[in-house]
Length: 355
Image (spheres, rainbow, N blue to C red):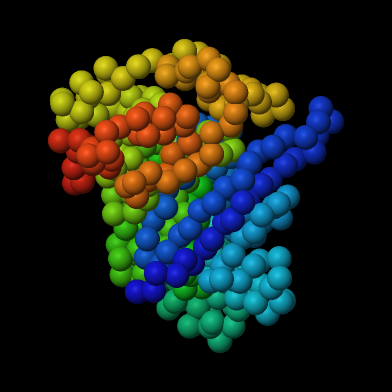
């Protein structure tokens, strides 16, 4: 498997012009997704996750920075290259009830892209391919679903149809925007297991958007997590390290809000410092220095509010944007091992109890 990224965002910014002034929804993001790997983008609502995902999918043009697919800048692609990119990158929306046309059957929904791109030649081939796609997402027997309309399906079944539609063109990358957030827990786990199987069997890369670190832990244990706050990544690293031993105060707060079945981890989460404020600053009027400092329990006047902290690499494989954490690392003794190992008890989730 190649280590070259499928998708690469470099300094990607997105500013929206409104009547009340510019809104910097995304303020310079650097991310990579590799073949067969998962990158989870995590954060509160309004932090810029979906805006980043839409730019990555080519649905919006970034204000600054670049979006590259297999080393090619989207802005410099020819019409033919753009067409290949649109086939290779598919988007799974959050709402399974709004994402499907209520006047189309499942067969009509799945076959539309197949016909448009000439993958099938006739109706017989289209039904066979549509049935194959339904089997891929565990909607069996497919004959029971092909002629159904969306209103005849449950939420979980609708979302599986959405996943099947996204797989119709044999994509290299799936962008999942809160694709399981509206589903019941048992259905959510089943769908995540299906997506994981597709990742492993088809070598599909994932940019997985979620506000739930429990879901990120379950689905991206062998991948990476990037934590966003007000349009910027504040912590980025391998999932076991970020979940097992968070370093940024915001990441600690997110993990402290997760219902953890492990008593040891639950106790550690409860003992985490509380935020100074629950109010999220406006994107139109961001605080000076670190944007998180008005809420940060580790806030130090004259340091955190003086300058914006850059996203810097640590001696381990993690990147952090925090003046206090980096200062403490620099103060560590020369003989200290400056790595962030997962805390005891942090382990790969095996069942839906992790959710």
